[in-house]
Length: 154
Image 1 (cartoon, helix red, strand yellow):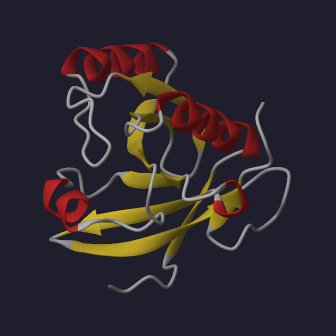
Image 2: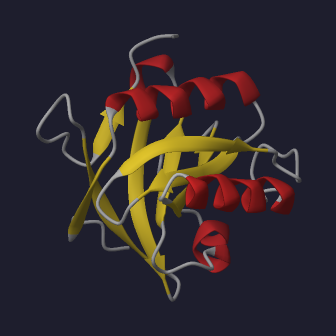
């Protein structure tokens, strides 16, 4: 799997902290949700129900997906990506993630909770069964080397 960054998206640390909190709250099940913003910037996240209620798979509830689309449009934004957690594995796309990635323009963000010391968030574009890492930049830091690390509960 090629993982060198070829593009970048701004995602404020506050959004990353919210994703980590959601992942912690849902563990040991995978959490999931949608990312709202523009092509260049993720402004906020929208939590969604995981229809699978599983520790290794997720499916965003379509009701939540359509609500996120409506809300984003009302704000002059769009759904630009999706996120989910890997409660027991690294923030790398699984074969299932790659095979079920239906939106090639999306940023897919994976939150890892392997251990408190290694909590991490990474972004990818997934197209045709391949993943390419997306560099996640924050307003607070000019570059975050493709990941945002967790800093305790919020």
